[in-house]
Image (tube, rainbow over all chains, first blue to last red; front, side):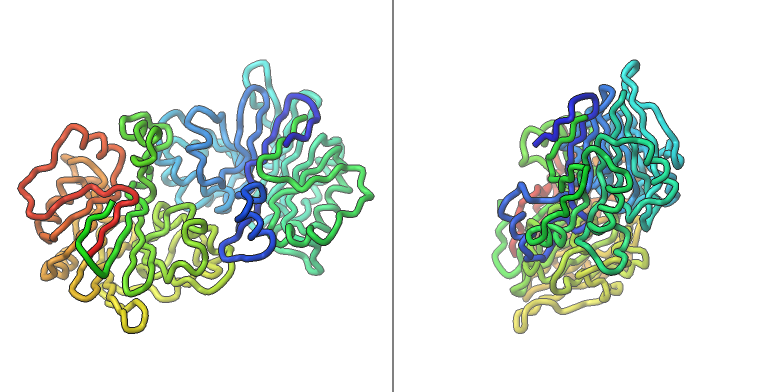
Length: 265
Length: 265
């Protein structure tokens, strides 16, 4: 599945689920039962593969089969949005492995996840981003830029603005809304693709730590990207979507991401 | 693969690896390469399924596909030896699931693993064992007994003595040697099966937190079980075993466990 925009940035959704994943343990809702029957409906821990500048970076590391998917040497680094379990648990076995250092660039979280910092093995946590820091990555002569965008979550969290030539993509999970400073920073960009946290169906009360659809669409209107991909989707939202169409007054083409979906721009 | 002893206790090794597992990330040793070629040589996180008294208990929860292997309702509980990542990481997604409480009986570890206690969902950590506490489990009229045996590790850890009728099995990981009190407690039993930590090939210096083969065999001599199964095996030990036979002066039949192996007694 490829959302073709043409070019130098390629992002593959490896997981589009929330912390419970879909199917969720013990849940027999329509979305969970469907995902048990058909692998295509599974939602794994929210994460993506970014290919740019001749390099490959993982965005978040919650998949539990990273060693098999990405043998040592096949990644240039990891962009870590934050250190909650469903975004970091896949690192746990890697740190007992061998080989060249694998840089993990994340927010300056003094705690990290579990005892990862204490026993880090080949994982290199030594160069966290600062808020709004812009860093050049990519092979020599093929640079692309990554800027850390502070988000609103229960643990220090950065989304990432990725720029390669004229192409611009923002990956913003986990968050509920956007801090004013981050919204102001992003507004001048016309994003080719916005990837955004949308965990829940519309809620009357402010949801905890994640966007519901209402708040996600508010951010989409504010940033007005060319294309939007909603991710970090709970089984509750999948069930809700079966009965509710999206409002259709958007200039941004809105897609609910699926595991395996590819965005090229 | 079944080590037939006949009867009421059945233990299936779900994982026999150490924290790095086999294959280990980035490692190209004989054991790791062999495990990449042939699934039968893989060593997953150290854990087992105990079937006794008409019930099913997991011993440790480091497997990362627990929801698929053990759908809600298929386990009666979890006997947790300790809360290191490779023994507890499989619980991380389960706690965001739904359904009836799943008891997790472990040592009284104030910290547990990551934020599991804080966000426990259907996992019930409320009844940890005390040292040497003996508890009756099993369906009414089919009781078996579990006694918590303190071990020597870098985090509070209990092995478990399982008794069903005349059958006795001890599962002792993670440990280096045995505390005197635990060795003294176990010596009067003639164990039908001893399952014991043996992570490393023989070491000159005292190894960290786990038995090497020398220390494991010392415990085997002391406890003199009918059968011994060594587990929590590192890739380093697998490589070493390719070139070194076991000493053959044991009355206990010693087996290096493999994932999927079954012990019945």
